[in-house]
Amino acid sequence: MKIDKRRAQSMIELAVLIIVISAGLIGISIYLKRSLQGRLRGVADDIGEQYSPTHTFSNTTVSAEVDTTTIIEVEGKDTEAKSTATTNTDETQTRTSTERVTGYEDEKLFP
Image (cartoon, rainbow, N blue to C red; front, side):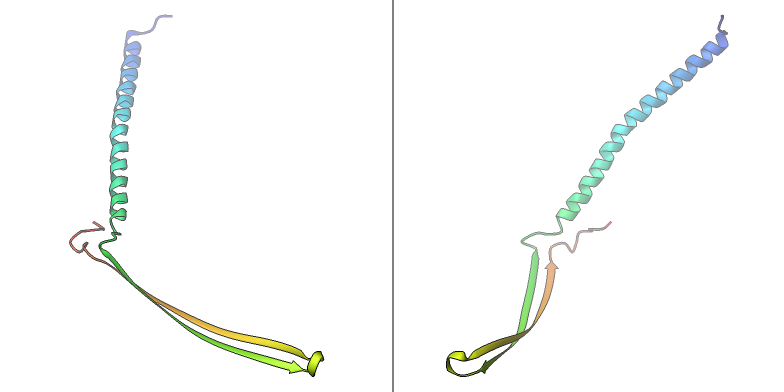
């Protein structure tokens, strides 16, 4: 059971090559993770900066129109009188809103 020297050398070269490639992939994965985390952090910061209490102005107008009709019907006399009350209400509500963010004219929010 002799192993040929050339075959043994080829196996050792292959093992060293696999170890070098594995070490390279492990080493680069750390930098890839950091790069992705940095990009995600940057995007999250951009989203968070879009609202600022000192730079955001909003105006909301609410108008309502209510129409109420009450009908009371009385039947009978004195102690045997029955009354029925019917109330119809129609309500329409309109809401108009505007919002303006200032102070970000010079910044590029979407590069």
